[in-house]
Image 1 (cartoon, rainbow over the protein chains, first blue to last red):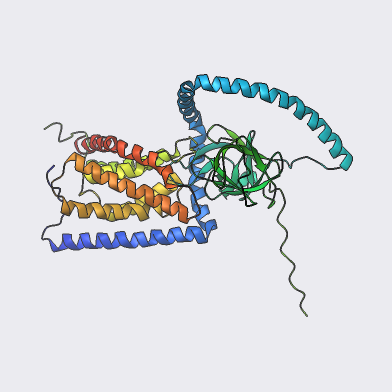
Image 2: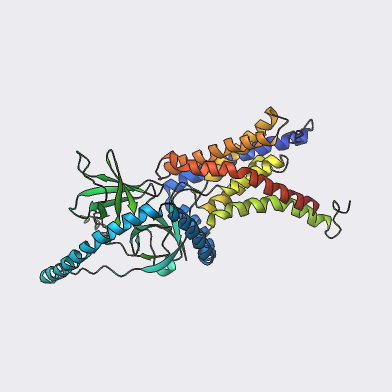
Length: 290
Length: 171
């Protein structure tokens, strides 16, 4: 390829033009850096701009979601053929196993209901704020966010937990008028207090950013997790109700376990937004003036 | 000659189209990120950046370095990254390619591809670093498949730019 003519040559005017172009570029970079700092220090203003964009794109995405799903299903379908044999054997064994457990669980549930009635505890979860479609995500960037097509006009507020039928999806990060951005469980910045379903062993779950969740026990010592352990929310902190399924342990790490989320956001279409499990306490009254 | 001088368009409209096609195609590239799939991994290549690199390496005189600022801002809105990420990353890439133009004057397609590969690696790693700094997490291994896909897709993006370039200039 011949050398391009990007250099201005001897014209003074063209040289100045190039120079001021660079000055403008560097100034713009500084402004961009300030915007980034502002998005960390004042997320509210930043979120207002970001959700204004999702307000525009969410209705379009909602319409095209069928195409996206068809494509995703095709890829999943091809991938499923690769390990069909070993998976079949595994699933048959699991099915037999879970049938036995299902019978036991039904008995436990009845007993549970009787005991609750005896104690007068209401087991009802609060009604969901809104039902929404999961319409998109941030597939390019390093953060794991999804977009849902319900926003402030449906009563969605930042911080509220988002659930799907299989389990916890994440929490609302930013709210627009008709759309909201949900921080998925697998996002690296999402921290959820959890416990093991069987014995209540407490832990902390953090996303890894690549489709898994890292769970660490709160007690030190030997790694207490085993493969197949079921992890649920513990309800500590008051954001998530206790007992929402998170996932099962798929692999052990030196100081914890990697959990595969039950609610795979790429495979679910609908999600429910719930109010905070415990309403935040009102601010303390001002000290009495004397 | 009839192919070069289009008789159906006024020169004014020709000039407008010549200027707008690269900008609009890059903006459309950013918008690919709103494709309605929910990604568990960061797998989708940064198509906006691929188009920017394609145009910049094909037509060095087309855009000054500051053009990365408005295009990057649009990309941030479309991809949902913290606002300021793409302007901050794309501008030094354009400045560095300007410097590379002085350094390697006669260039082949392979050298352009290598320049784009370095630019993409820088962009994805810097974006990962900025995501970490603004509250994200994870390991850098997670972006490697995305980086490989982006580098392999660059010739396709450049080919698309070349087709659009012919269309915008010749009609």
